[in-house]
Image (cartoon, rainbow, N blue to C red; front, side, top):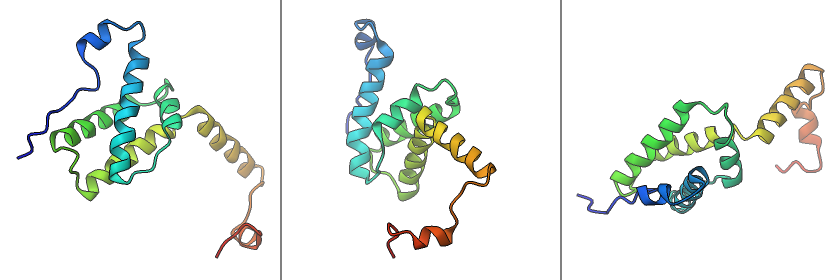
Length: 132
């Protein structure tokens, strides 16, 4: 049985004694994820993640899922199965996709595609940047 102590991201005094609890929470969450995701081999973008967290369009269900995955990970000392690691990775990526610059690039690409502005696979393969 794992006897590792579960450290909360925030404590009651942390929240009461700060003028900006949301920023404190984000900072602590990013610190936790930065440490743990690296150990799990998950590549992520903390800046994009923060952008996604701050997007009011981010569904609460995704945040609840992240919370559940972190609680599970803490309960088992971050000794997660491959499927749990993948689920955590996918959830972090889901949050990153709500980063406003990323969403704008998707909208722009959709508009370009609708206008017939796109690159075919053949054109991409002929590109000097294409590596086989």
